[in-house]
Length: 176
Image (cartoon, rainbow, N blue to C red; front, side):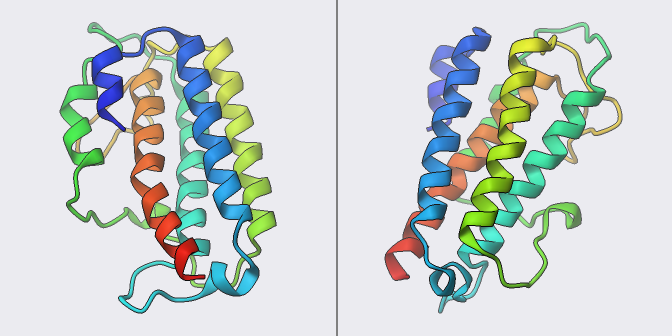
């Protein structure tokens, strides 16, 4: 899914907003398909349950909104230059450990509540796509591997990251 970005090299912000809306609709529909027991059931092979995975995505959306609010620094490069650098990491199969601020707490969650919280954060993100200069970077929130990224690079990164986790959520839904 991430490689579609490389083919298009999304520079049209309407396109980016539409892609984010589509991803959000898919994510919310999937989360809402769970009952509470299935949402919080621990997978047999270990790893996060659907509730924890949803919280992980929510925490990333909250961080993205912080990035967007602080993206005020002009960069002297193409605003999507780093997309080819991070795409293999985000779309690959290598398991990565989430940084501590993106690790969900081991608590029970309600699917409807998680869907509502994700929708609220993503509405703010989609609004920012239409109103902000996405070529600016946030120096307050560098990526741990790729350093300072533009708002545009962060938006593509988070969308790819969500698509990385959608198959996991689908697999958990099939078990629920």
